[in-house]
Amino acid sequence: EIVMTQSPATLSVSPGERVTLSCRASQSISNNLAWYQQKPGQAPRLLIYGASTRATGIPVRFSGSGSGTEFTLTISSLQSEDFAIYYCQQYNKGPPYTFGQGTKLDIK
Amino acid sequence: EVRLVESGGALVQPGGSLRLSCVVSGFDFSKYSMNWVRQAPGKGLEWVSYVSGGSRTIYYAESVKGRFTVSRDNARNSLYLQMNSLKGEDAAVYYCARDGSGKSINWFDPWGQGTPVTVSS
Image 1: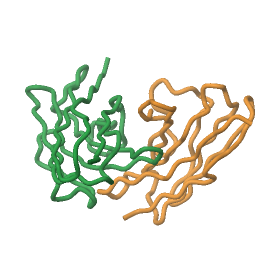
Image 2: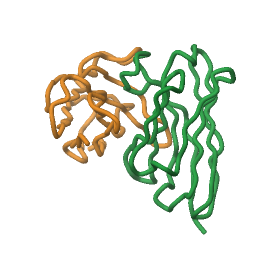
Image 3: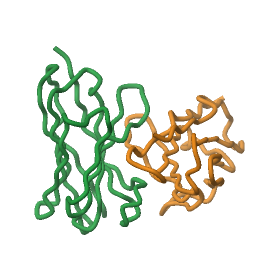
Image 4: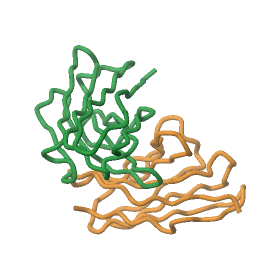
């Protein structure tokens, strides 16, 4: 099973800041990585697939990069609606299709 | 508009059974593989099960193998999860999620709103 590790677990940031979230795979997954955003009481929403392709309707301030085992999600200028939990997920080798444990963005 | 609506979540005793449903609309259901993903209270996301468009290929997480059964009825645009021998650790919100690629590549998009399952005596 491929283990996905996200860091940090929590990040306190201010609106307008640029933020980078990390996700590491326990073995190479090529670019077969997705990012999701989840707000309290809501279902996850797909942000990025293929490590760097924005899903339909996702603002350009969200960008993804990386390949192999190291990936990042960058939000160029945080908006109030971006405070949420972010999960990465690998789909290179499955099942199982594994998620990271999540990174929570808090308002500083 | 693509919609996925889960139902069937409830309070059930340990050892009991439950059947979840997910009714979809807005796309050709038979052409997409589907998944169940769960989230225990305050925890992260855990993939549970996968079924291909024609039900030929089915996968389960090790944690539910032998106890859960996924199925679909393409004529009714419906996905199901039969859960037997439920344990406390099965308590979670259960989401149905479509394969986002349409090619069984298995990123998940979109997701339903979820249905909660509580396992307690």
